[in-house]
Image (cartoon, rainbow, N blue to C red; front, side, top):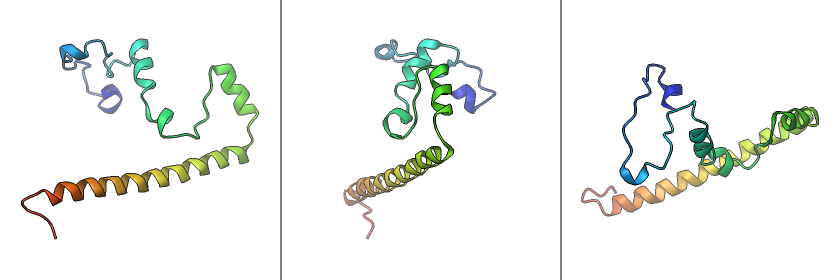
Length: 110
């Protein structure tokens, strides 16, 4: 993924810890094994429930041809609503975490 973020990235990465050598390098974009491994851990499978998944290019074409613009707008609206709810949940969780950390700090905020 570094190649996508930093075009000057040479592709050289740090060697993994010996206990992690079985995990493919996420920075090698032409590795099918790496892409399959990291894609399964990607957000859209876990936090974006309204994503329309397809199994092949043919399936994608069939789904696109069978879906109206209004249906796509509804999916987009449901995604936006879910994203807003997730944002609120994360804000609340981080607020709680930081309050707990602060309560144990010698420089406790008031």
